[in-house]
Length: 442
Ligand code: HEM
Image (tube, rainbow, N blue to C red; front, side):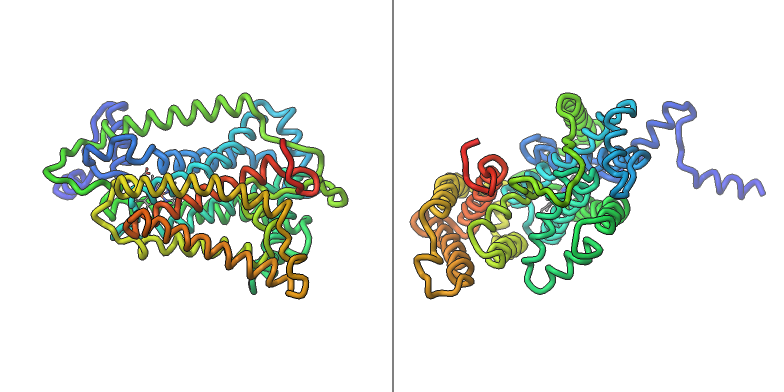
């Protein structure tokens, strides 16, 4: 049997004999399952990715770990949820810090994933085989938003109860499926015990499992598609070993993120208002901040029109890889100098036009009373929707022809316009809407 023992031993990975050497070998092995052994030197430049995908991945891990710890104290019943959070805040050692870390990581994740999407768009990270990862990424973004949304209800305070009531109310306006989706999510028609149980199960079991699966696929695809988007090289490209070059940078970024997050969580506790009171809506009742752009849109047009406009933007994002096939521009920020110019023009235009339209619609323009014989579905829905879509088409044409931008460069301008508009609408929703959602100075 000696030959058999020799055979089995030959199959064993050759690990160093000392404890530290063995640990290092295992860690390196793990890293090389995620990364290739060598990476092109330009991929290590910070300006290529700003580390945003990695930071998002790190935040996901922090969320899962802190979430597991929170589960030991949290009680998903409408009688005890609020008290369990209060207990955690006041009586559990480091409970308040743990909750703040979880809360702020969740909010930061929405920001970093959105910025990662913007980075991928600007560097043409969706060209060629990366197309499917772009579309898959959009599903990831929606999942991250939904993940956050389900967590929002759990503290069962006034903020949670009413933000979810308003948020799920938005679903009612989704054509055909909206009402069924809202009923399914709430386990009925109201935010109550069934809703809390459903949100809890989704938040701690279904969505983390789905996110882990989807992220594994996302990372696998990044490797399979040849890593991050880089400009096509004109000559041979130097390759550096992942360990220590890439891993060193990743550790540095992770350390900075952790320090900033911990510092922030120590200074700013997670909010907790008074116990949820279904009979007393706060004034104004606002959705979670990342849905306030949509809520703001609803103040200006029929809900169906607002949903169709947001849906068209999402569809437009999914169509980006089919619309822009300027593959020679891969890795070049904004495709070219002209593309960057178009991006700046689009962004500045949105900073000018969006607030102006908000103010005009709030104080001066009232289409239903200007056209009293027309149905409000037309004056408040069809007309604003058609005007908004026509406005977007006009901006694209303006960039395309007078500025003589190629389709891919004009698209950079249009993307910047829509991004800018979303930022303006969100800022207005968060800071400039007071009681009865009236526009006011903060
Ligand atoms: C939790 C969410 C997400 C995580 C953790 C994540 C993570 C990552 C990481 C680590 C990379 C490698 C490069 C880098 O560090 O930036 C990457 C690349 C990529 N991501 Fe994501 N991502 C997420 C969401 C998204 C979204 C929302 C999109 C777009 C809609 C997207 C599209 C892509 C594409 C196309 C690539 C490959 C192209 C390139 O990097 O240039 N990802 N992602």
